[in-house]
Amino acid sequence: MTAVAARRDGSAALRPGQRHARRRELWAGLAFLSPWILGFAIFTVWPLINSLYISLTDYDVVNDPTFVGTANYEQLFADPKIATALSNTLWLALLQVPTHVVVALLLALLLNQAGRSSAFFRTLFYLPKMTPAVAIGVLFLLMFNGQEGVINQGLAAIGIDGPSWTTDAFWVKPGLVLMGLFSVGSAVIILLAALRGVPDELLEAARLDGAGPVRRTLSVTVPLISPVLFFLVVINTIDSIQTFTEAYTAFGGAGRTAYGNEGALFYVVYLFQQGFEFFNMGFASAMAWVLFLVILVITGIQLLVSKRFVYYEAERA
Amino acid sequence: MSAVNAHAAAAAAPDAVDMSPRREGRTRKRWVRVLVGVALAILAFALSYPFLWLLSASFKPRSDIFDNRLIPEVFTLDNYASIWTEAPMALWAGNTVLVTVLAATTVTISSAMVAWGFAYYRFRGRSVLFGLVLATMMLPGAVTMIPTFLIWNSVGLTGSLVPLWAGNLFGSAFYIFLLRQFFLGLPREAFEAARLDGANGWRIFRSVAVPMCRPAIILTLLFEVQAAWTDLMRPLIYLRDESDFTLPRGLKQIVDQFGVAGNYQWELVVTAGVLTTIPMIVLFFFGQRYFMDGIATTRAPR
Image 1 (cartoon, each protein chain N blue to C red):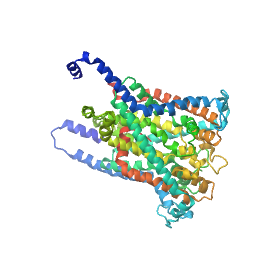
Image 2: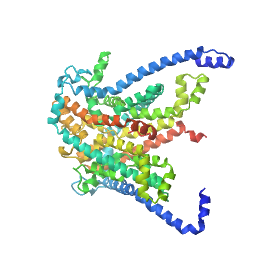
Image 3: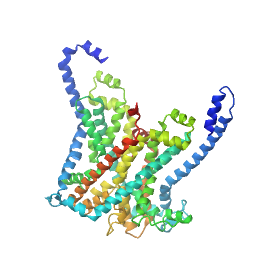
Image 4: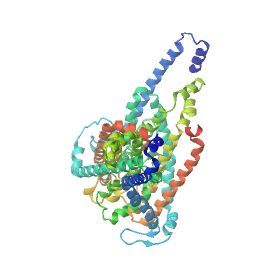
C-alpha cells in the first residue's frame, strides 16, 4: 500500500520534502517528550551523579561538603547497625515475597472457581489495598499488640499463647508479613487475569488424562502463568527491600529516644534516619548506592533463575 | 476418577443417552460452587476485618478499644468531636487535597503528552529513549531520595508543599508506559483524518487522541490520587511546620503525640486513621471499574 502511494506521488521528486517532513516529525516528537527529557536530566541523571559525589563527602546540608574519599563506604561496613538493617531487610523479603505470592495465588485460584460472583469478591479483596500504609502501621501496633491485640486474644481463645509481635525482635517480621497480607488484593487481581488466560482445552485435556485438580493446577496452570508469578516475585522483592512506612509509623520518629524495635530496623528506615534525622547526607548516599547494588544483584539472580522455571509461550513456538 | 469414567463411557457408547455421570458432575459442581462461595465470603471478611476494626474502634470510648467487638458496646461520637480540637485535621485535609489535585493533574497531563510523543511520532532514537523510560521505572526510589532532597533544598523549597507534587510536571515512567500502550491501540486513521483537516500536532493530541483514551486518563488520575494521598515518606522529608502537614504526616504526628509516646490515647489515633482512609474508600467506589480493569490489564501492583 505505502509503496504504491509513494510511487504515485513520485518518490524521487519528493525526497527533499520527505526529509523536511521527517525533520518536522522529529521536532514535534521531541516537543511532546520535552517534559520527560527535562525531568530525566534533573531528577534522574543529575541525582545519580550527585549522589555518587555526595557519597564520597562528609555533608550535613548546612556546611559545604568536604571530600573524604571512600570513608563513608568503610564506615558502612564497620557499622553494626548496617549489618542488622541489611539482615532484617533480607529476612523480611525472604518471608514476605513467597507468603504474599502464594497466598495471592491461592486466593486467585479460588476466585477463578467462583463463576459470576468473582467480580464482586475481587472488588472486596482489592478494597483493603486502598488503606494508606501509615494506617496499616497503626493497625499493626494495635491489632498485633502482645497483650491486648485482637490477634493474640484470638490465639488465646484457641489455647495458644501468642508472641509479643510488636516488641520482640524476631516476631516483628512475621507480624509485618501477616499484616501485609491485608493488601494482597492487587496481586490477586493480576493473577486472576492471568488465570483467565489459561486455555480451557489444556485443562480439559489434562482432566481427560486423569489429572486431579491439584495436579492440573501444578502441572498446567502454574507453568502457564509463571511469567506473571515471576513478575510478582520481582516487583514484591523490590518493594519488600524498600519497606519503610509501616515500620517507621510503628517504631520511628519524634517523641522516642530510640527506634522502637531493633528487629524492625529495615535498611530504608536506617537510610532515612541517617539522612533526615542525623543529616549524614554522605553516609546516607553511600547507603543508597549499596542498596541499589543489592537490588540489582538480587533482581539479576532472579532473572537468571527464572530462565529455568518461567515458561514463555512465544519462546516455545 | 469420575472424569475418567465419563470419558470411558462416552468412548464406549457414543450414542447412548446416559446422562447420569453428567448429572452427578453437575450436582457436585454446585456443591463446589457453594463451598467456594462460603470460603470467599470468609476470606473477604478476614481481609476487610482490619478496616472494620479501625472503624468500629473510632466509635468506642478509650477503655473499650481493645475489647475486640465489631459492634461497639458503648457507641460514642466523642472521638470525632475531640480529634478536630486536638489536631488541625481540617487544615491537614485541605493540604492533602491541594497536593493530591496538583500531583494527579500535572502527572496525567505531562505523562499523556510524553506517551503521545512516543506513540505517534516516528523518529530516530525513539526506542532508545523509551528504553530509558522503562529503565527509570526499575530505579528504586530510595536511591534518588537524598539527591532529590538536595535539589529542592538548593532552590529553597523544602518546608513547602511544592516538592510533594512539582516533580510530577515532568511525567512519570509508569504512567508514560501505561498511556503509550493505550495510544498505540488507537486506530491511526482517525489522526490522519484530523491531520488532513488541517489540525496541528497539539490539536490532534488534545482533541482526538486524549478523548479517545479517556479510560486510561482516568486510570492514571485515580492511581496518582491514591499515591499522592497516602504518601508518608515525602511529607516526612519535606514538611517541617505542623500547619503544612498532609493527613498521613498528621496521622504519624498523632501516633507519636497521643499514642506511643503520649498517654496512649489510641481513640484519637484510630479516629484520625479512619479520617485518612475514608476518602480512599470513596475514591475506590467511584472508580472501581477503572481500578479493576486497569490493574488486570496493565499488571500494575501498587
